[in-house]
Length: 276
Ligand SMILES: [Zn+2]
Image (cartoon, rainbow, N blue to C red; front, side, top):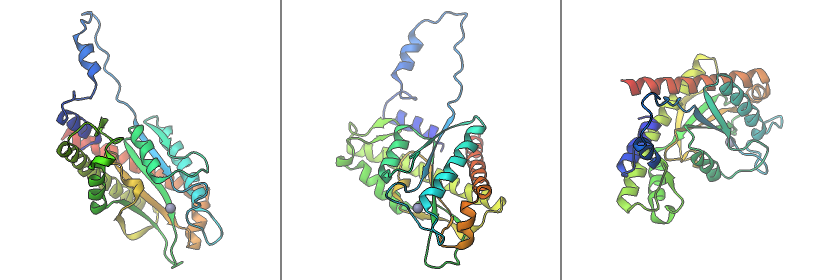
């Protein structure tokens, strides 16, 4: 189910108008001059939220030659922002635009508040084995997703929670639980589809991937209940070749293009599903 459909469904379920806008009704009642046709509103450009990992006091992983994760992921996020904006099809916001520290939950909150259509967190990995290299893609695991849904629906967390544009605070327990679970289930599926698309697009573009690349984990940054999200580890800073590549502009551009292609393909496929 697309994010948009989910929002409509959720809105309908909670007794709001399909778009959650009381204003639509008021507008419809006003007699419009017969000769003037209502302009068809242009579809809102999708809002892509890019999340360059770490920042400020948190440098992230450290490369063998001293490269800092927070710096390379910012360079690649900027490149991706340029790629996405170039086609005039998307709006793009970053969770951080300078070398500053932003808490993980705050990153999610910013995307929620802006009602992002997609959330992409960019990271670079490190591990003890310096031979390990390649990119990998993560989505929220089902256990983590269930935990989040339960936590969000819990009364004490409901005060500020807004899901699909609705405040959970004024919903009773069952409705809150149902809303969160429905939204999250659809989002998890959309996120998985996005991650698989990234893996395929990377593969097609000759970007090295880890075996069994699409993994599931409990990253806090992926916990938005109504925004499809994936976390991409773009390579290993603990591997000499990967570290070098991640700092080379040409490779940064290649990664950004592959990610932009993934975003395009994600929405193209979503559109096809909706029409079917
Ligand atoms: Zn990281």
